[in-house]
Image 1 (spheres, rainbow, N blue to C red):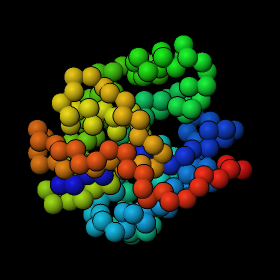
Image 2 (cartoon, rainbow, N blue to C red; image 1 turned 120 degrees about the vertical axis):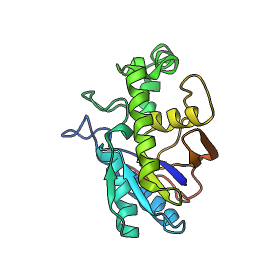
Image 3 (cartoon, rainbow, N blue to C red; image 1 turned 90 degrees about the vertical axis):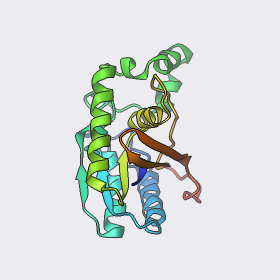
Length: 201
């Protein structure tokens, strides 16, 4: 099967009412539509999403464009799912080199999650997604930076989580033949975003 991993679009980090699970900002909604236009040319058969709002809203643009339902799997959620406030990578970097290096050294521990539990949850969601899509499926998964990095690390046979730094609304592609044979086709495609960034206002 073919599997497309899409990181969610740009979230409204300053959203007062939904600080822990922000919706997409204006740019993020535009990014979601650009992803939908790209995927409309790719014969997608299934859509899967993280339960978090920024991922679901990104998935909704493709769901509406293609007329496909969204299946939600908790295992595709980001490691920050239960924190009181979402903080972007840019925000973490702005807190100073010491704080940034602490995040880079061990993102999962920094976010207060058990690495083994998080890995098991993501890989279980991955296996469920592969089964759901079927051998001939072409499934788009709308998720987050760390789950994408974990799946890519797993696919490449790396013995630790490597941060691949997928951009907002980027696309990474896998070919899955069976549980033990995963090919990485591309990482962090952003060419479908042919527009300048605008204000979040």
